[in-house]
Image 1: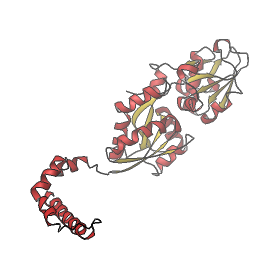
Image 2: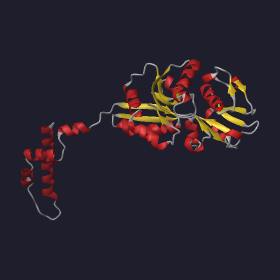
Image 3: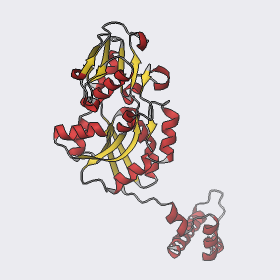
Image 4: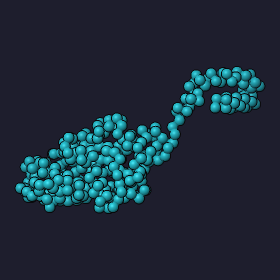
Length: 308
């Protein structure tokens, strides 16, 4: 390689010398011969080594282009976290393409159909439920973060003195509704039947001393009715999109060491059979890196917590 570089440089300098001799603006003429003689092979080699442009250095600086990873994601915080991962993946030779979806169905369908390599928007209970209901074949390849569920003020702000018949909006999908109801139970608003757990629905409400009305809405719609209901119960990404902070705005939320928070870790999901894909492994490795953990900690005020 070094000999080829020297030959090319010699030819280039020789050509430059000839052109300079023919086209000098001040009329001075040079033969170009003396200039070329100065740049001997040995001198060129020394100059290259002084500049650090040896063959070995050039090879070290080169990044092998390995391919593109396509990910379907929710806007906040998933796509934001993925944006931070792009340069880290680029350094490993991977181009990351992120497409934002505003629902909880299409991101799974496009991975199942092989239109996308992976998605990042859901927790394990939702994934399991979706597979069972839709007949899909999606698997978890890594937990990245969890988002504490919170109860946020609407037309009322004092949960302890909630009004009679107050309306509380909750997500209507199976796992998120159960999570919302469990949080309401933990704060004394309702009592669920024994054993209802992570499959609880409004039909499992056993006691409702304030006769609150539970308004079931598609998850993305809950925050949008906050000015029409007493309280809204939101998962982390929709709370962030609505401008809520767990630390500053939630009147109650899941603690970081709670079973619910650990159960609902948000994951990277792929179609079964793609778990060992090199790009997927690189994606998970980067998303679990210290750089990404630091970004999450410094950005989301407790609304998003990196999963160990």
